[in-house]
Length: 405
Image (cartoon, rainbow, N blue to C red; front, side, top):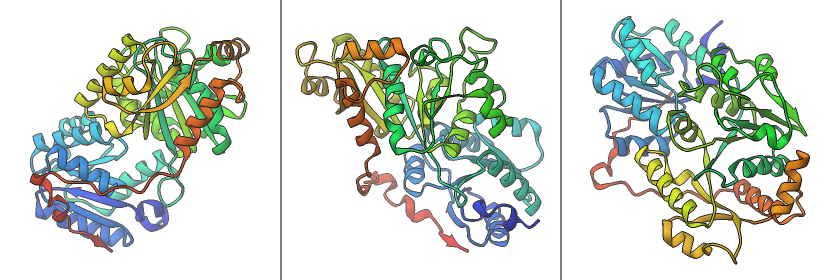
């Protein structure tokens, strides 16, 4: 079967090639143009600095990045790490000079999804794209990527899990296929809130991430009220402290659900950062009490330090009451962050729903707040405003050589 017949979706992808080597770039151009005539190839003939790289990834939104590790292994590995850190949704294929097992392992550990060995061949490309398409069977050209919304508390007891579960049911009216995933490895409470049981948890999905398919996935989730729910472990299991990368679960969810709402217990640590980097939006749940707001400021600083896009973060102030705590205006001034949504204090409705294992009624104050939140998140996005490049990299996009074959 020809490459175009096997991989029609990959044939329409936008490829970003980052390589200072004219020889490697020319070889890739010939390979892609010969096998994938409808593809678009963008080139950066240098190893770009972090700010310029992030701008390119955001503006151009490539489907796949081909990163040169052959010309300079150290800088190539740094490049892969930066893409995996700053733009985890973009898969990276490492371009390596020989069948060097140690270098291949280093690339994979740095965050590469696959690798190509120079000199490149159609057979290599077919195998690599075949594996990538297999991981995302409805990737661009065959389907539409779903949306991932991560819900994270600024500190414990801010009600993030209640917001996550409640928002899922309110969102269900606008999405035909929904996933609610509790990826909190130690203190997950979605099973308690919804009165659900399962012999499996997301840890099984982590273990089986290379073999995830619809049949395996079906055994790992619990359907309830038209929503698929993936639970956290009931108790500590082997390897739970070693998990670092949620890409396997989130990539599968992105291509099989319209919207996935992910409940995580903390913003801190490699596992949680991986989830936040893959998310399209991050709902940071706090309250208007001073300790929670101090914790919120710390979280925002931590996300900045770990290069999580601040533009994805939306602050949700939960259990809000005008008579208790700080006002919305004071909150925004104190932490220098706009409040995206206020969710009112509604103890009775939330407790009743928790006892019954049901969604908070739409008619309740908290339910109405969730409805407004779902509407705001689900509304049509405003047209993107032109980005202002830094003076040092104002001409970065001019480095591109755009070729539509």
